[in-house]
Length: 357
Image 1 (cartoon, rainbow, N blue to C red):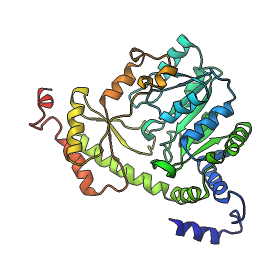
Image 2 (image 1 turned 180 degrees about the horizontal axis):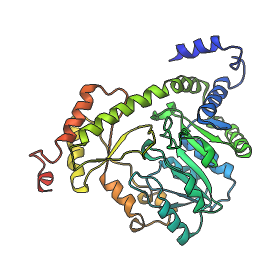
Image 3 (image 1 turned 30 degrees about the vertical axis):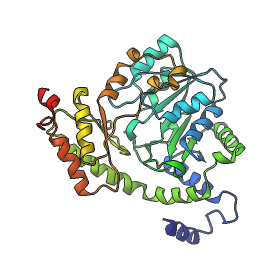
Image 4 (image 1 turned 180 degrees about the vertical axis):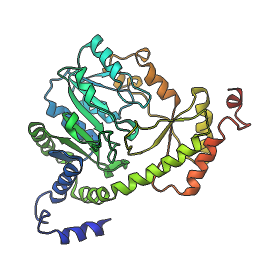
């Protein structure tokens, strides 16, 4: 991974930042991300949590302001909001887990416009953000594209381009690694917001992305297209396996869009999902449920005014969704094991519930 970076640096010494320049790799990453996603400004930071903290601080709202998002958003969205003293609001989702336009309009009619709207590209599938701001006059829109680097909208724009939002947050890897290997970039076309983000980042050294991780991210950025294409091929194999299975429905990206495919989500009847999940685990397959809904979280729920009855589509999605792996390390034998389990759903004699259904 490092070899290609060193080779690029030697070849492009006339244009690349010099070795003795401060944060040369970080600056190079910011320029590469901004150019790739069509943004005027990019601010690289150590983690998605830091990215949302910077975005909220740049917005300039006083403590007590409201942040509206979905209950299936990345937890860093609400963690950073609570850390900044904001109140949380949750609106319902559509079948893909995206912030639903009608639900947003109804929520605003009942509770008023929030100070900020965070719209997540759930499961790496692109969300059309443009209509959202029209239903909440005065709200500042932030896109959560943490897991959607490499996705393309129906209009042909890369997800992460801030032309439809005040700011976007992207992960620097199509599937975020754990611990110290993950980072994020805040993108914006607004020079004032960018300056505020940089000022806040530079106040604390732990907010900055290290030179090592910036160098690795530059290499990974060059491999991004191939990685997303490989995951798309794995998703196509899953699609074929599910074509004849009426009990399992894939959560597909919107028509005309390209997903980043950080994972492959399916919907299984709630009464059957536990059997499917256990069967996958018994075959050594890392299927999982969605994370705990944020409005039900024992900590974040204290900062929100949402009741489960107000979010019926969210509750149903959480009860039915199952996440299948799309890791680039999966071989054909691994994919075959997953598809065999999916094809056998409802026909396993050990699953009395499935047969009863």
